[in-house]
Length: 419
Image 1 (cartoon, rainbow, N blue to C red):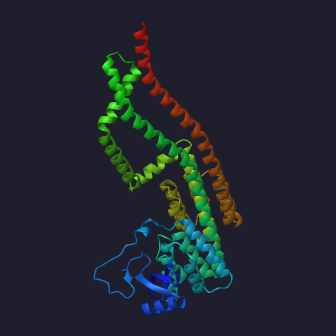
Image 2: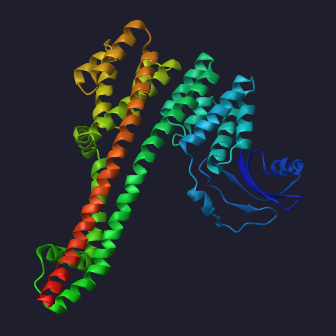
Image 3: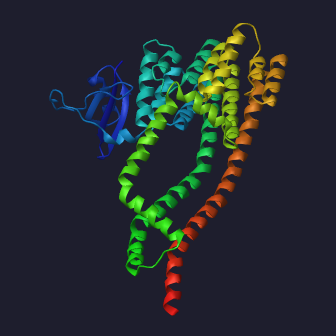
């Protein structure tokens, strides 16, 4: 069944936008007419939004296209998916058929891109596709974790429980990410502002002062000569320096994401004092939370380990999990390979081993995730509280350098004049 994106007007003149999956344009007009909406524009679209916009009642010229630039700035966030999942879980738990529940979700979803994806998913369900296969057509919106959990829920008949767990899981990941981003936002903004202010002074203010000192012909202190040298370099070569910085950053990003550079970068990152420990804790929290959610939803262990291997986002730890998956296939435990790698803390290995022996692996992993998420939160707050005074002291030293470099020669000239 086609999916149509439409624009219409109510009897009061209000413009409405929406998405409907109907058989044809005539059915689209009839559905809108029942809602007392006059169709002004529509297009048949897929989940990516491709399709030609057509004015209702107007013959479109061949090859013409209308692009909605506002939608280019819209993205589907994890929180949008979490809210949709929680609403869907509520409807399914209340006994509403899945297709009808999806229709209700489509109607109340405000994000146009997500509305399109959900409308296409509902169309696939109407055509007989399974829910996880319909979601699997949109891997950028619903990741492997989401799709495999839905597959397990469909197989076991506990889809509403799985959807509830998915909503909780997605929201917990979003909260963890937001805490980290919120903690580092202020220091990053302060650093950027400081760099811009110093660069502006070096390029605009210091050259004028330099001309004044040169006219006086006096011998300048070393600190002032250093400041003038830095200012001359920035004023003369700033285009090349800027291009070099951009090119260097681009090269670094390309190396960091390459097959050969990514493992080396992740290994170096784990060895950085303080930061490496934080990166490890974040990865372990993500690993334990994801694996616990997958196993409690009925996903097979080997499949769950394969998913978690891609979720960790650190090649060193992902390699350990890949080796653990191979060892499990050969009859080994999870805790054994984790312990031999020495990359996972002893406490994590110990709790995983206890969970395997007692049959409570899901609960143990959940406890590990909660513990490490709490540690990440406290560590980020501690680092933020340390970074702020360090940045203040650094700014004070920089300001003192600038003031001294400018005032020392003035004081020297004043003393010479008085003498």
